[in-house]
Amino acid sequence: MKIVVLMKQTPDTAQLSASMDGLQLMAGGPRIINPWDEYAIEEGLKLREAHGGSVTLLCLGDPAAAEALKRGLAMGADEAVLLSDPAFDGGDTLATARALAAAIRKLGDVDLVIAGRSSIDGGNHATAVQTAALLDVPQLSYVAAITAVDPAAQTITVERAIDTGRQTVSSRLPAVMSVVKEINEPRYPSFMQIRKAAKKEIPVWGPAELGLDAGQVGAAGSQVSWPVVELPPARDAQVEIIGGTPDEAAKTLVDRLLAEKII
Ligand SMILES: Cc1cc2nc3c(=O)[nH]c(=O)nc-3n(C[C@H](O)[C@H](O)[C@H](O)COP(=O)(O)OP(=O)(O)OC[C@H]3O[C@@H](n4cnc5c(N)ncnc54)[C@H](O)[C@@H]3O)c2cc1C
Image (cartoon, rainbow, N blue to C red; front, side, top):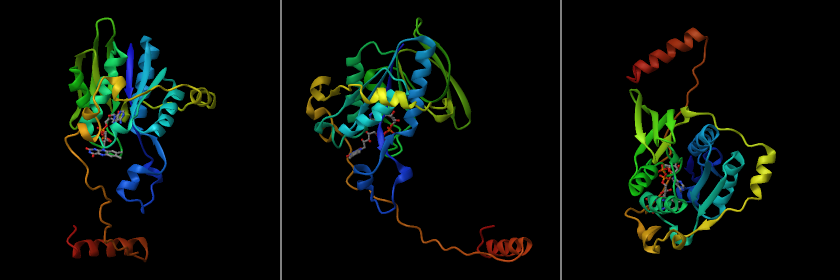
């Protein structure tokens, strides 16, 4: 199977400081593979192990995003392509999906595209859906398990995680699928794999390599813009420690909750 995994580099939210405003959050600070995309990479690797083929990582980002791709290569992916060019700056999800779809077409004969559920920064949950629409292939969202794949027959059956339980969906391939974390446990690359991946060449494609005009990508190719990104206002919270024995504390707590009409 020829598998493409869409992966984004995002800020490491575990290491953000409260003083960073939203725009700094986007522009600076430590960065990682979008955590949801690690599950997408793992699922691609498991499918390759079961059915043969290759896993190609695809990321649209600035030149520093190559580091995230190297981490994905260290997990075991065969190759990686970085879509990077100043013309991609300020793109919305549709402009991003347009570039990703063009790259997938250029890679050719792709059976399955796997994305994460969403990014931890933008969180639009839209890029995979729009990529599927632009490629004119089925979209399987929130996949929690792949129950059957037949590369020869070009079919796939998955379980989708929905609010009320699991939904079984069968589809033809090629398709675009987004995965949730229940699907697997991403592997950790070994030290040797990290060293090997660090030496791999990662081709960089811009709009010209994708056969797109600069006006179709980035801010110029977008329908929405982000004029302001900011942290939510700080909450005016007060803390009170209730003392006494456990019984006394419980009684005081219940009295206070009743007085505040919380219970
Ligand atoms: C500096 C900056 C400026 C921005 N300006 C705007 C703006 O003006 N207007 C606007 O609407 N948005 C803007 N964005 C957000 C940008 O459009 C989104 O980050 C991008 O389109 C993906 O959307 P998302 O992060 O919500 O991902 P989601 O749609 O939540 O992602 C779902 C999945 O799609 C895949 N995916 C998402 N992004 C990528 C990627 N780049 N490469 C490969 N795979 C990917 C991943 O598998 C991911 O798990 C800006 C972002 C940055 C960093």
